[in-house]
Length: 505
Image (cartoon, rainbow, N blue to C red):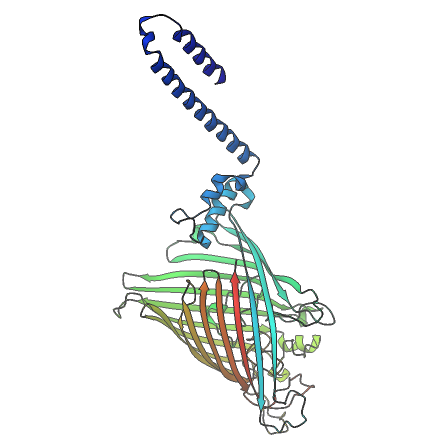
């Protein structure tokens, strides 16, 4: 290119000194040649930029190039617009995925929750000089929850991932013993000690691409490892705390049974085979076999812009070797299987009924729900009675009802929720129920009744402010019994208030 440009300039000089008739227009010719020179220079610059771009792609440094940075921005947004999660994931896929093949189909996500929590304890006793759990008292604490995870797709069928989360270890073993809370308390233990991080999830999921639209079948999913609870969607805090991540395998299928312009009928079936406690012998191993079926009928026959959804779900949880495991392992502490379950409950075969209706008013979703629980395996007893005449062993049912208005998702949106729960001592496995619904001691138990209030506001695209309150008291008060592993449940009401700031990234 440079040799060609020199040849053109030399020719221009020669022609400019040749005394022909058209020499009178030499100035015009020189102007044209100068313009050609500028065009040649621009072409050379373009070629140099293209060569640089090729080198960047070959060296996998696409993220450092101006072109990549520009394409990472939303195509229809101004420079001052905030990038959405979809824009970010698309930018990762388009820029990193093409240059670094192993990162194609990756997704990173996490959240940080800062919590201010207050307890107030009240009872009917004369607390003069009392210092135990029966005393009226208060407690304030600040807590942190940090979670971060990674997922990667393989082709269209496979996905693997993991998630790390904070947790509180045992004071003796150093192993996390609370399966219902990834919170860590600031100042406990004191002196600015480091906080622990554990594996919260580690899983592989298989979703056959050929079954995503196969007649009435609209998808099949099979997962293994330690994963998000597949039964949580159609449940309440009576049975499952939202932080429980089961271990084992599960299978799930979705069906479209009827589909018209005004009405739709969908179904979901979920099976789970979970490893609850692996002991030294097979006869002492505890496992959970879970079965869940849900039907959702969506209709526009009420004359609304959005459909009204009616859902009915039935779940059955069969805990095998439950009482044998407790006796073999000696798990009768507050963070064990028992909590407020009693050994004489024998086993747990829990029936869970959950109806729900969702409709819209003023373009805002409203959810009404009810939950009924019964432990079909509870044999009960009448020969072990508390000193005050109460007997908790036949308390094998639980129920709850509540509502939710709105959904804190988009910036400026909000939600309001309420639930009332009455949980018999042997109705559900206390080790997996909501750890915030209860006290004293701050841990969740059965044998409780009370209210849960919730209010959330989406302050920014990535930040939510939540307030949650609990007013809980024992369903059947009694003093603890160490022989049966029953935790103390004095006649005490607990008010718990939580103010959270949640940052998603």
